[in-house]
Length: 453
Image (cartoon, rainbow, N blue to C red; front, top):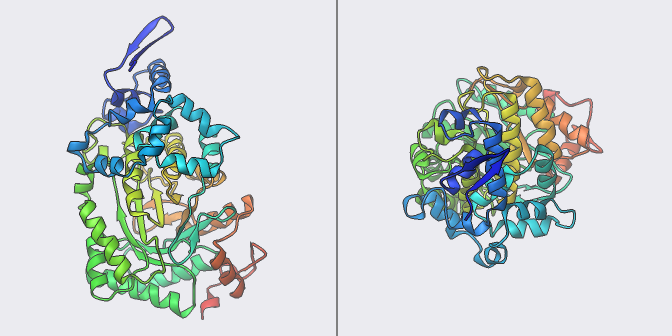
């Protein structure tokens, strides 16, 4: 395995696959903080050259965290289709990039190919792609999943209605749910982040959202984004849950900080299949994001993008209905500005979809990042063009409970209209029945909460 090259009469050498992956990454403040980033654009280019010539087998044989030491690595490797891997193991990463971007390679081939790739391979090929490469590659891949609605169909764009409230007021949350639905947001899920993570509070929000969905016969699913253990206790007590949530990371150490492991996720999935309210079979919802591992001192010297890819490799074990990044949620210590956020969103979308996940994007930023609404809207438009399955819908784009910025109900409607996309099939019929949408466009009743009187 060659780990060196010469550029402009300067020799660059790297000690490991892990170092090559880190140095080949586009500039991110979290990698710089961890002191693993390339020190110059030439060193970054040298790492990309070395990476482009590296065989997939070299990456397979050198996971960034050893199999024996990390549960995430074990889940990823145990899930690889070895027959497919053996067909392509002698390809270079550059050849993999060319195959993915070839006009002759279609969605079916890419979804099959993804089953034979480890997460480090997927991260590697993303590092060789420009922004337009990532958009073109992402467009091709159309993973689908079914909970109560079918997500991922071509020509469809879904949204999570995110009606958070700083005191978990059921009345305030209900107003936001009505507003979101009136703008066509909520076909992915009505998903509430609770301020209070107790069984009683979470159960109350689950019953409220479920009862509202049943009353108005809305084809969607409910979810309260508490810790998985809280949701499981609520489910045992009879709370109606259609979709079970958990935040995930790309190392065992980071997941331990989140209070989760494979055994717990297996138990949660089994419980949902036994007691959950959804038709399924996909009943899990995961959120991820570049930077969580380094912020928790659990990165093991691995770059943020590669760790994010590993999170997707871990997540696909539970065949989720939804996965989305929140890569700008931490702040400038991981993604410094809007440019880094946009790049991370494009990388995450491609990597998630090549893992076979129904991938959404949350082009988030915090108020102390060097980013603004323009950056967020650019990220939203680019990832929508790239075929994101869903976005968040937050009242006015400002989450008053979590204190960060995300896509608004109005942004969601604009993305659909600009790109000629429609809601999920079952949900569109409901919107038409309610007079909110006609021929794929919102009517004058959009934004009118009296619809639900």
